[in-house]
Each structure stands twice: as C-alpha cells, then as structure tokens.
Length: 459
Length: 170
Image (tube, rainbow over all chains, first blue to last red; front, side):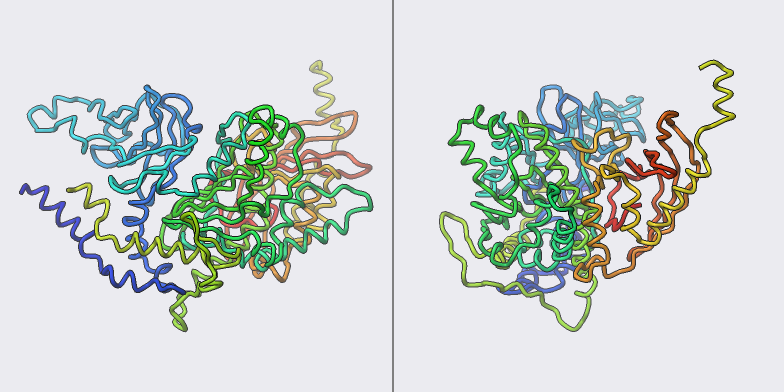
C-alpha cells in the first residue's frame, strides 16, 4: 500500500466509515407519524445528507437550452460539489467537477458563459470541454516525475452519471442505482406535460434565474411544496388583500389579470383536499391532476389554436387537461408544468438554502404565455412577492424554535391510514401529510445505506 | 442645436432641478414612512415600479424581475402591508433612503415630461439590517404643477444576488 492510499483511507475513514450516527440511530429519527428535530438542526446530519442523499440521488443540474452552442457552460452545485454543465464540440452535454486537477481551485467562477476550453486562473492548466487535461504550462518540469496526463485525477473529472429527459439534465454522483426514468417514476409525466404544452414539443430556459436565499434547512422548503394545510392560513392575508382590492375597483372596471393567479392561494381546505396528493417511490410527490389551483386561468388567444394545429384536438385537450400543482422530485427539483416554472434546491448549510427559480418558454406558443409565467413567478416566488416571504418566515420560525428543548418531535400524521395505493402510486386527500411521510421514507432509505458514493469511487 | 442655442438652454432650463429633487425626496419619504397608499398615488394610472434581476435588463414582460408591479398590484400590496394574518408582517419594516447624483437625462420641452437618474443607498431594517444600493430611473410626467411617475426603475448593484425577503418597495 502506498503512502497516498494510506492517507486516503484515513481520510475516508474519518468522513465515511465512522460517522457518529449509526444506521440504527439514523433510522430512529424517523417514525411513522413523526420525525426527530435533529434532522433539521444537526450540521452532522446535513453533512451525511450531502453524501448519502445528494451524493446518490439524481439531482437536477440544468436544462440543455442553457448550453445551446459548443463551449456554452453553466456553473452550479450538486449538494456541496461544484460542477459545470458544458456542451462539448461533439454536441454532448457533460457534467464535470468544477475543480482544477492540479491544486484544486474552482476553475470557472462565472455562473455561465462560453469558452473554447477551461483554464485554471492559478497556474494555467487547461482542460478540454469534457474535462480532460489539455496542457500544463512549462511542461518540462514534469519530465520524469511520474505525472500521467491521462490519469483522471489530473483532469476536471466527469460526475458518475448524467441523463437527460426532454432537455432536463440530471446527474448522480453515484455509479450505481436506478436509471433516471426508473428513479422518477410517475413524476416524469409532469416534465413530459410541460414540454407537451409547447406546440413544438420543446421548452427552453429564458434568461437568468431568480435566486432566493432561505434561512432554513432544505427539507423545510421541500416539505412545504405539497403541504396543502398551510396556504389558507399562511397565505390568507394576500387572499384578503386581493379581494379587498377587487372590491375597491370602480364599478365596471376590469378585474386585473394578476387576481386569478393570487386568489387560489386563499382557497378552502375542501378545494385542496379535492386536489389530492399523490406520492411514489424515492420521495417524489405531486398535487392535483384533474384540477389544481392553476385550472381556472383564462385562455390566452392563439394558444389553443397553435396546440390543435400541432398536436390535434384530442391530444391537446389531454395535455392541457392535466393540471398538477407542484411536482416535487426529491431532493432537488420542483416543477409547475401548468405555468412553466421550475424551482431548484441548492442546500448551503444545515440552516441555509438557496432556491433558484427558472422560467421556460413553450416554443411555438404566443409570447403572452411566457409573460404569464413571469407574472406568476413575480407574484408567488420572488423574494419580493406577497406569497414566498410568508413561507420563508414560517421556515425561519421553525428553524429557530425547533431548538427549544420543550419538545423533540415534529408531527406529520395528518390523514394517516387513509391512503389508497394503485399502479405503484399512493394517493390521499390534499391536506394530508402523506408527501412528508413519503419523503422521510426515502430519507431513511438513503441515510441508512452503508454503501456511500465516495466508497464506491474509491473501490 | 447651435452652440448658442445649447448655451441658452443651459442658462434657461425649462425644468427646475430643485423641484425635481424635492419630488424624489418626497417619494422616498413616503416609502420611509411605509405610506404605500399615498406613495402609489404618485404613479400614473398605467404607472409601473420595476426592479430587474439582471444587469441592463431590457424587457420587464418576457424576462423575470424581482418586482414589476402596476397600480393594481400596488393596491394589493398596500392592503396586505402590515396584515395581522401575514407571518412575514409581524416584524417592523423600516427604511432610510439617501438619494444623490440626481441628473436629468431626458427632457421634453413641449410637455415638461422628463427622465431622471439618481443614485441611492437605502438601509432597510426587517428582521436584520440590510444595505441596498443602486440607480433609480424615474420617468416623470408633468401633470399641472407637479409630476407623476410613469415608471420607477430600481437597478440594484446586486440585482442578481440571492436576496432574502424584500418586504417593500425600495
């Protein structure tokens, strides 16, 4: 055994083989009706999640339309790993670690751009668009030193697995596990539905993202996505304010188009119960189906005609008849197919989470569809909206007061025992805590797997 | 324009910079006092408030913005402000605006309408203290002996940074 290997082994032992939490202890944090507060509070559990969940699951990286030309790249993270998504000269979209194979510096600091090759700004090592080492300056210094330029450790290494569906690129840092389609299960239909809402069957990212920095654990944001017990309480004020504004309009004045977007957030328990929640393997879930809070939007002139011309009446009605609310693909991604928005979870620390909202154009659809997407996002998702900040504040309150020693458990038993399972999915009333229980089932599966991605890599 | 005419227009500006400054100070004072009801009345009926997310952003409709609000949404915001049912509104929202480097970048001699740029620093206190800075572009319409705002555009120097909740207009 070489000296290097010994050091590696020691490092890995510290990081992966002797965590202070045993699998039994981790499993004990999740019960059928409740979870222990430490899952939100303990920095050590956060680090384990980065390895065992974010190092294993398919995590959303970007959309192919963000890297249209060879050399186009975006910079992002998978868990805490810095990565680049880049289109190479053959047109392949690669996901590589944003780490120089020499001294380990982050090679590209810009969020996006175009480049002929990657060049580390520190010592000038250059890398091809697939991450392979291109050249080292003043190469003679490495003569007879044993440096093998084809050894992956000197490259910007590719992540273990990359797959794309309808242009949505996901990556897994683990060599083993289900393929992307199997991983997604019935959640995949939501991505298809968004793309099928384009008369050309294609969507593209428009412009920069809207980032929103949260003072909470990433799971609080995720659990809220299909928590329909909160809107009529947490978002009650904006519902009242909107109704008051409509009442104040002069008689005969048209109702502003924003009202149809904001108002459903104040809907009743009954409406959300009727929407229903559906969960599947790996922690994924969605609300709605036949109807959702997006069902009652007014028609945008020309859109239905363009859809029927492209897809025919039957398929168009089928595509537009599907009305899901948030489809949450655990742990990194949530999509609103009916409004062409995705939000991406980038965990930063146990109590810090970055949420990025990206917006999509339905190719071939009237531009007003895109305008509605932007209006929705500003009204609901923006850090300056009148909806997001109320969610934000409740997450921050939990992150703060879960430290209270007056109790240790967080309840999630609502409507337990009333689920129905068929065709591989489980369904319940919309205000059930089912999606949360399902997320913690996945959490426990991931967290108690002895085999971690880092161990595989080093085998 | 001949050099003489140019000199004349400099000597006899048909706008009063002091009046424009006072208008901007008044607008900022309404924000610092959380008086959204009177603040929104400064806007024309089709007036908008725009805070882009991207540098040099051209399009408020086809690209996302942090804020792009018309009078209708301003009215909802005024009705929601301080609402007892809103978790986010349980904290004081305080601000202090400083405005400087005020310059007239466009002026219509016929109508008196003008476009004003200014630099600002606004300290907001909401849960914690935050410093916002940037450039404002006011498109002003001359109405009688005062102005109304056709658009207020606020370009934050960190427009594309991940912000926490921004609870009011800056």
